[in-house]
View (cartoon, rainbow, N blue to C red):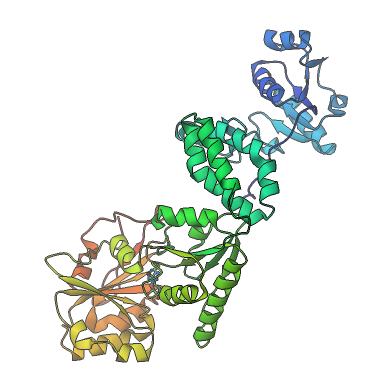
Length: 483
Ligand SMILES: C[S@@+](CC[C@H](N)C(=O)[O-])C[C@H]1O[C@@H](n2cnc3c(N)ncnc32)[C@H](O)[C@@H]1O
C-alpha cells in the first residue's frame, strides 16, 4: 500500500495556476481556483462560453492553441483537464520535470496533488481525501459532514480569528491559551454565537480575559476500555482531545491512542515485572511533574482505571500532591470479553453473581477465598490469570467446584485478533497451553461460559470476526469461525 498523502491547504492568492483545457471540467476547476484568489491562466484551443466570458472580463488569461510546455513558466500549480489522455499525460510529465505540482482530472496515478472533497464553514474547512481510490466515498462523507456540522461554526471561527491577538497578549503561555480557547469553544461563547447572540459571546470573552494567565495543570484518569476504540466513552474521547501529555499503559490499543490530540506528547509507562513498585512511583512523579508544569495530563489505562489498574494509588498520589484530577471510567475487560464472546455473565438461569478476581502471582492466589470462589451458580472473571491456570484449576477442584464447569478464555478481547478458547475446568491449563493462550487474556469460569457458542456475535470488531476455539473432540481440536 502506498504512503498516505500529506494534507496541506495552499494559499494561491495572487499565484499563477495553469489550467489546461477549455471544456466544462476546466470551467468548474477555474471557478474554484478563482474563488481562492489564484491568477488563473487557461490554455486551450477553444473555450466554453463561461470561460470565454471570464477571459473577456479580465478574470482569466487565455493561452490559445495546443498545449505548449512554456505555458508552465511562472506557474505554481497545473491542472490538466482536457479530454485527451495523451495531452494530460504530457502536461503531467512537463510539470514533473519543472517540479510543478500537477493534478490530472480522473487520472490519479499521474497526479502529484489531489483536490479533496470539502466542507466549508466560513474560514473553517474540512478536506476529505481517499487518495483517489474511492472518490464516491469521500463525497458521501462530505454529505454526512454537511448535515452534521453546525452552520454557525463559520461564525465561531471568524469570531475567534478576531480575538487571536488579544488572547495571545493576555495569555502568553501557549498551553494556558489553548485551555482558555477550548473553554470558549465548548462553553457559553459558542452557545451564544450559535443563537446569534454576539453580545453574549463578547461577555463570555471578557470573562475569559479576566481569568488567571498561569497554566492550570490537571490529571484526567481515563479508562481506555479493552481495545476496541468504539468502547471508549465520549468523555474519554474529549479528555484525549484536550491532552497535552498522555501517559499510557502497554495494554492500551493503538487505535485508542490514535484518538489523542496529535500534538500531545505520548509516553508509554510499561511496568516490568520486578521493578513494579519503582516504576509505579515514577508514574506518580511523571503525573505530578507534568501537571505542575500546567499541562492537561491524561493517564490512559486499559479497561477501567479502578479495576485492577492501580488507578487508586495514582489518585492518592495526586491528592497528596494537591493536583486537580478527574476520573473517567472505562469498560473493564470482564464486561467487554463477556459481551464480545457472547457470554452473559449473570444469565439468571446460571449465575446469581459475578466476581472479578485477580490471580497474577502466587501470593495473590494464596490469599483468595477459595471456598467462596468454588461456590456454584456464580461466574468468576479472572484477570491476569494466564500464568496460574493450573493452580486456579487445582484450588477450585479441591474446594468442590465441579470438574465439568465450563470456561472461556478470551484472549485480546474486543480486538480484531480476539480468540475464545472453550473447555471445562478439569482441562483448563492443558487447553490453554495447547492453544498457546497469551496475555492479555481473561478467564470466564462458570455455567454461563457454555453459552458462548449459542449466542450471536453482537459486538464483534468490524475488521475480522473473532476466532472461537471449541473444546477439543476426543481426537483433534475443532476450529470454528464465528458467524
Ligand atoms: C492490569 S489488569 C488491568 C485491567 C483493566 N484495568 C480492566 O479494567 O480491564 C490486566 C489484565 O486485564 C485483562 N485484560 C485487559 N484487557 C484485556 C483484553 N482486551 N482481553 C482480555 N483480557 C484483558 C487481562 O487479564 C490482563 O492480564
